[in-house]
Length: 413
Image (cartoon, rainbow, N blue to C red):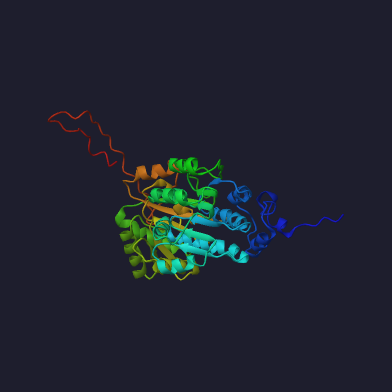
């Protein structure tokens, strides 16, 4: 007997192959056409479970292929019946990228999809809903608006995906998510994907999911293995000086994070004044401006993209050479999401962070979360800055007519 080998078996080692996961032949052909040679760990674990129709919780860091982990089983399961799917995401950018990915598979099954996001004309979205799309990709706010206008009904939703669930909760969408969950049919499959597992997600899983299978690919706080880290301790007024040197050292695409939208605007303007091709993404930019910035960055029209944390999970651009934390994030977990924009899909990446001398505790919080020490680098002028020494403070109970006693001259906290 002559044994024939499926050509897809050659695409990856057996442990990380798409072959044998229960994927329909038609979708396997699409995967081959898209040149997806290996399944990522989250795809390899999630797809067979999701194809069985089970509720699923996937905990995996950014850049691990979570979109295809739910896109493939969603389309295949929808092809078996007449129900629809709802994919909830935290940001407009992520919604557009999810639609781009899922449509590559859905179009072969003649399935229409629609993106329901704020910042885009609602009347155009209402017209698209009249065409009865099988897949809805939405941000919670716009979906609630359409529900209130009775332009969308969720009673035929057979598959619900909560993508970047922890980010949606961080952004204050918990009440909207609860309301949406009450409107979706109880006879549904629910898939939840997240980079972390806060208690609020456990609450959602307990209340709204049926014996979910949980898979954790990497512990919360784990960064991409192929990303190296570097830290400059630098006073705020000298940040741009070191940034100029970094922009000369690294010639590839650079994603630069600031803490505030005003800071992002100022920095992007300063970079353009220095002759750099730089765009910006933050909440004061319109949807069309944000799409132009992201598409221009992806195509190389802009080498530098300055952004607030709105982009820490909403950007999926291959080949970002460097991520710069011009400002450290307020939440240590956002450090992981930011640097997850580089070193994706097995590629090497690098992350540089600026910390002012009084941010020792912020850096320690990040290091504690990631279970690593970030190397401190020498300034271009050859100096090595240090964090301020912790201040020793002695204070007792407040007594009438007395003040707290503190020892000064020991640096800042």
